[in-house]
Image 1 (spheres, rainbow, N blue to C red):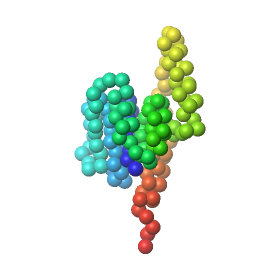
Image 2: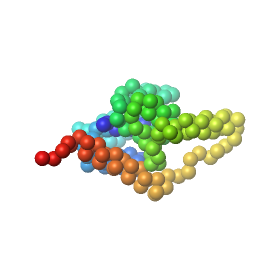
Image 3: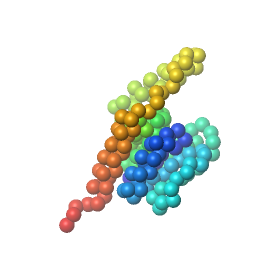
Image 4: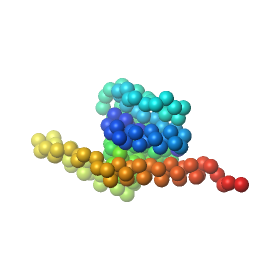
Length: 156
């Protein structure tokens, strides 16, 4: 499993949680963004800068993921594509995107986009809560622990 972070919109506090987790576990993690993001120099932490433009980072992540990888994103269409590749998608707010919920999320996203296009102001998402940060960290830690158990094999 590799971790891919849709880093253009990833909150700094979530980036820090991810960095602590991958530094602790050694799991490979790549941050993909169209602008430079300060990251520690570690063998398992990478940065991939892409050109600016609509969905460029998303398309690069989709091109590179493999089944079983984990993508951190709040982008619902990207999460949908990730699931189609048998990879996992986790939002920075600690919500798993699943094949059971992705259609409804896409529908709601499209509805809200139509509302905004017609001039209705929705105000954007609320500030990330401590509970959401904790949920994200817990989900990430559980997934990393599961991955590490699976790759370490039986102990003699």
